[in-house]
Length: 636
Image (cartoon, rainbow, N blue to C red):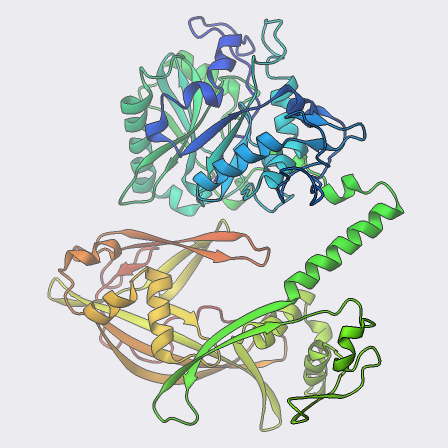
C-alpha cells in the first residue's frame, strides 16, 4: 500500500495570494495523520495511532542503524521480539552501550499489528519510511522489529523529527508530540493511486501519483473521465467543508470498475516540498490564478516519460551500514548462510496423477522434503547412527540398512553437461536463462528435458481455454488483447484466449479449473454448476526457444471448450455478462524477489473484425479451433 512519503511542503496563507514559498505553521500541523484521521475514518483505511516517548525519539535520532537485539531468555517479562538486554526498570530506557529497550511500545505495536490482520505499514506524523523499503523488500511489517528498523533507517522520518517547520516563519522546530501510525496493509496497484491539489477550497488538478510507471489503460478517454469524475465526487461529498484548510494536497486510491470506490490515503501541505508529481508548483500557482472550470488531469503518456522515484535517492544497504570491520563482514556472511540454509531446509510439493495401480483413479501426491543438519556429530547419542565416522548402521532389528552418502547438488552440472553433449552452447545462455531453465525443470516441474531420437528436447504443456457464450443470438468467445504487468503493457496482435502453463504431471481437467479461477476468478463450484467443459483437441507445436538458444521446445497444447450454460444469469456480471460490457480483472503473481506484482487485464465487447485493444467478447468466427489461432502464455 502506498502512503504519502513526502516531507511537509512550503505553504502560503490560505486566504492570501502570497508566493508559493510562504508557509504557515497551522497548515503543516493540520496535515498530521492524528489530526485528520478521526474526521475521515469512514473513507480511509483502518489504522491505529500510538504515542511515542521522548526516549524513542532520541533513539530514532541517534547515529547509526541499530538492529534490534533479542532479550536474554531469563529477562523479566521478556518477549521474543523485544529489544535490548532487559534489566532496566524504566519503561523506555537506553543502556550505556547504545542498545535500546522499549518493552511497552513493543507490546503496543504487537497488539496493534494483531488487530490490523497481522500486516501493517508504519509512518510518523506525516511521512512513511518509503526510502527504506529496500530493507524488507516492501513497507509491509509483521512485527515490532520490522517497524522500528524501517523508521530508524528512513530519511523521510528524520525530516518529520527535525525539519517539519523549516520553511515556516514559526520558531517551532517540532510538533508537540510524535505519534506512530500503523495502517492496515493492502496490496494496491500503483495505477490506481492519484494525487489531487486543492486551492481556495476548489479542486484544481489531479495527477497520477506513482510517476515511475506507465499505465496504458489510463490513456483511455473513458477510463480517465471515469476516474476524474469519481475523484471530483469524492472531493465534493467527503472533503469539502470537512477539512479545515483552503488549500492542501490529498492522495486517493480509486478502485477498479465496477466498484469505483475512492479511498482517502493522506493529506499533505500545499508547497514545493510536497511532490507535485506531473505538475510543478509554478504551474499550479498559475492555474490557481486562472481559476479553471474543471481540474486538469495528467498521467504518464509513455514509457519514455516515466520519472525516477524520489525514495530511490535515499537508500543504502542496511548490512553495509552495520559492517564496520572484518568481524562485521564475517557476521554478515554467517547471517546469509543461515538464511540460505533455512530456505533450502524445507520444500513442499503437491501434484495429481493417474494411479499406476488403480485404473482411472486420480491420486494426489504430497511430499514434504526436510533437511536436518547435525551440528555436532561427536555426541555419544549419535553413535547408533554411525557417527562420527559415518559408518553404515541398521535399524528395525537389522531389517533396514543405512549408509552415509556424500551430498552433492550436481543437478546444475548435470543439466549443463546434458546441454553440451547435445550440441547446445551454454555460453549463449544468459545466466538468468540457465537459472530459469533449471528452476522450471527441477524445482517447479513446469517442463521436462528429454532426449528424443538423439536430440535434446524441452517439453512444455499448455492448456488453452475457449470460453463461449450465446449473446444476442450469436456465439461469442472471450479473447485477450492486452495485458499489463510490472508497469508495462503487452499488446497481443493476434487473437488470444485464456492460456496457462501446466505442471508436467498435471491433468488437463485440473489445469482448466485452475486457469478459469486464476485468470478470471470463476470459483470451482460455479464452474461445475454453470459451465459445460469438454476436451476439444490436443496438438503439438515445435519451435526453437529464444530464451534458450539451440534448445528445441515441443509445446503440447490442450485446447478446451467451455460454454456458459446460461449467460443471462446475473452471477456472471463480474465477467461482463449478460450485456457483454467492459470489465477488468486483477490478479497477483509472485516475482522472483518474493514481492507480488499486480496483473491487469481489461475486457469489453467487440464484434467481427473491428477488434479493440482490450480482451473482449467478439462474435465467434466460423472455425475458432483451427491450428495457429492465438498464442501461448509463457512460451519462450
